[in-house]
Length: 193
Image (tube, rainbow, N blue to C red; front, side, top):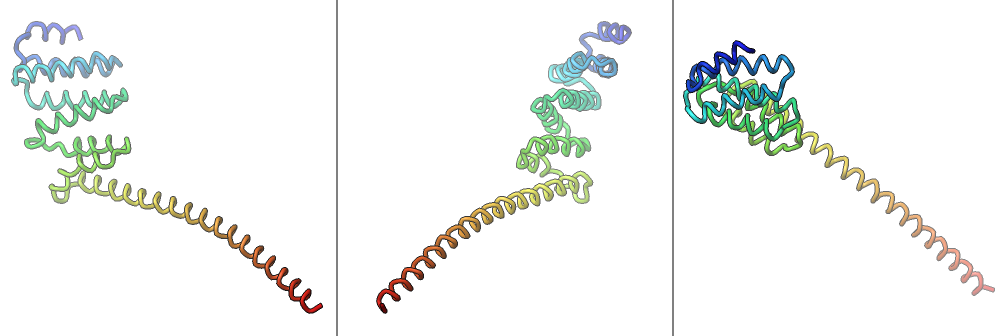
């Protein structure tokens, strides 16, 4: 780590050169369990790119991807989705990032935000035969089935409750009919006597 810090200091002001050592530093910090420091190093690479535009794209992509992974591991789902969305907005047209698009939708899906997941996955369907598009489609189909099944279970429960209420009302009606019948028979016998 000390060597990387020295390299970063000596190349200060040269984002194209310093970005790679920052990426290596962040990876080491991650391995050492220093997630906060690693996230800061990945963010520093992003800041260098924002300020200069001179960071190699491959380094910037890797930094944003690793940053989103750490954010996700730390339960920072909104930060992770924002980082992934930024990454996709910047580089999806020029790099194959389908797996990251799928990951973005998966985060939304796991939070119960099916519509956001569908929106995130929509661009995958434009790539015919894409493995990630098929995965997303399968998830959405499963979700639709699950929603339909849940609706069925609610309706079934309501139907059972209605049937129970009707059976109670039928029993009361039968009791009333029997009472009327008994009263009619009694009245008829009284009239004969």
